[in-house]
Image (cartoon, rainbow, N blue to C red; front, side, top):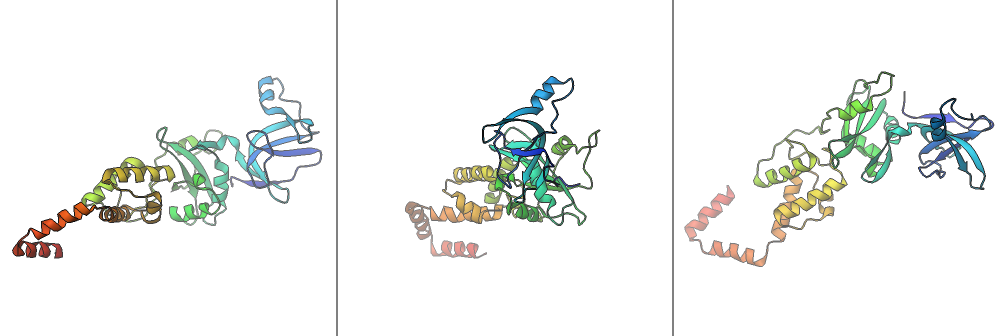
Length: 309
């Protein structure tokens, strides 16, 4: 069963509203919570005044009329033709990096991809600052690369809603009442999502950059050709990486340079080497030339032979 489904239009004498967190109507295509009103609305829950107060609300329409509505707890959106798409429960809403995210919306986009049968997205929290989205999915075609999934989602969703890790599962764990056990998924160890061959760092520069990555990503054994993004990096971590690189090597790399040309450790090392040469002072160059001039012809020959090797 998909995380979304069309529920058509409101039946006669029933009103359907889709409102945001401030109880304001959302535009067609935008996600909000579904409210129901109209002649068929019940008075409330029998013998449950607190639950009635929580779910049955007075809503003031644009013309100033006050109507009674029922807050369903389901997320949905209107299609341009007026039909309604249900995206699941609002209790799957999370907040990440200052953004409020509807996990059901991400799941709906994932399940719209041809190779994904079903998807569940969870917020994984290793600490108060280490929080990221993980997508678990089922597929009849085997594993789909994280790069393909991320690229497909990026065409529809903003960057902060695109999960950074993806895990193929044979089935989803269920709670006692038969619902997907999101808590169990959030606690599950997930792979890095990288499918590249691991080439370990070996030079001093590679080892230094790898140490910075490992601390930021909370991973070990990162290869020099693995992607920072595929390993779980996001915009905030990329900013932190640039700051750490500049401080470690006393250079001035820009965020744009790293985004364009620094997705792997090998590429970062190349950028660092280029920047060190560009920012070398005249005094540094004069000192190097002076050292070469001070060598005897035999010593210079030995130095050139060593560089050729």
